[in-house]
Image (cartoon, rainbow, N blue to C red; front, side):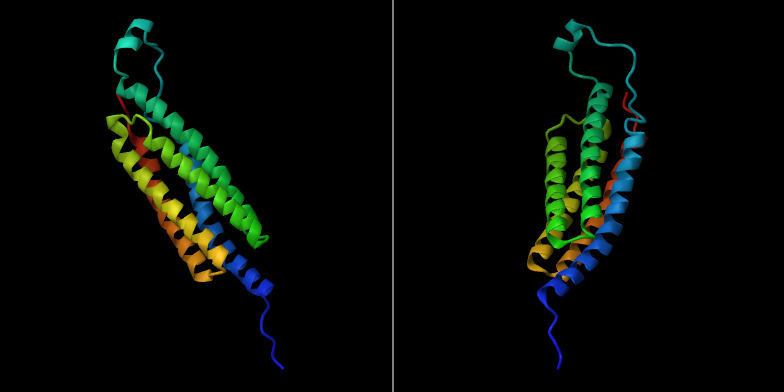
Length: 186
């Protein structure tokens, strides 16, 4: 007499599929953000000269000043996203509910990061890198949402698709990270 696998076994299989795919993808993304954080502002160091109150009130911020503010924002938000993605990596080996909760939290952190940089005043020297970073974060968000939807529906194929999207997004984020690190804003 054969038995039909119970729901918990299919959930466990789904966790294994998700854990393998997401951990591989997320390790790459977390590594990229760690690399970015170590190089943040490499080409946009703050000078020792500070604007006076009169020039600050009337002058448009320099490209350098905008770059310092932008890279600071990116570094702060990248750190938060790295932590959230690390939690996904940690939780997706235990149970579906914990994994899904971590995926949702990471997608919310990613969405907040994207919102912050979309609202930032981006210096001309970093506009190409910003566009690349926004594309990467949008793709990462899509992958996280697909993974969440797959977990909710217990659809391993959708979870795997989400993991592949996360991996592709990490390539785009790596390109943006490299662009930001290489740019020098006057």
